[in-house]
View 1 (cartoon, one colour):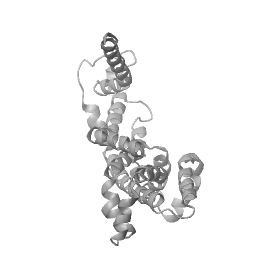
View 2: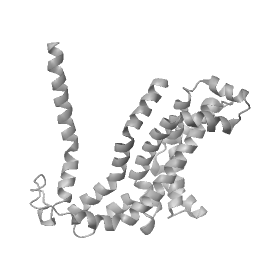
View 3: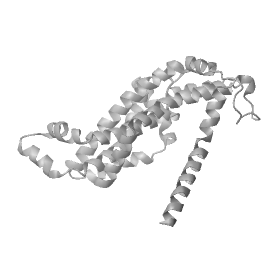
View 4: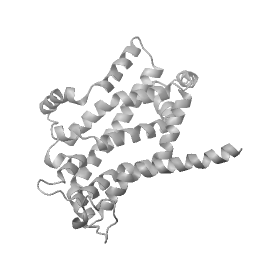
Length: 273
């Protein structure tokens, strides 16, 4: 009992210390973003500002707002489509097995291990041929295709826990492929959609290589515009940090709002799988 009363506070102290250590960069970013430009120096990096200046946020937002809109146009449909197609793939590969289905699943998973750089040139050539280069729909297409392996894996493992008897009873009542999916499988996979949605939303929002390679100027997402925010002569670090925090805010809000559902969905998949 004495050991337990000693170790528990020590564990909390260690966890708090690690959390503070992890949040140190965020502290520096926020403090720098509200400092006047003349106080943004290495010597005063950890110091609090003498006066709070929010103008860096308005400047950063005015520069990034068109690209933020582009990113929402990209992320929302790409996340929905990749989750929906991954759900359908997982449904087929777990409940409608056919000859060679395991090989098909292995081939899909192989896409997870193909580096972006190895397919970049043929991908750009293909997008030029079909008229999707330098367009938001082109980026949506790329992220949906590249997201299918991981979304298929997640949903296949999730659907493997659904008893076959539930689907058999639906088949006895005359339900076909899509009716079974719509009335039985889909309602049971809401937590799976939350997990996959958060995963895809975060990955697509933060992705840089495809965005900088496939889009230019007005079509660029926010992560590319954030790099261009630095300028060519003098880097306004307060504006740069404000822009970085603004760009990170949507994913942070997603985790704050849906974080408990994300953890619940992961635990459900681990227990059932």
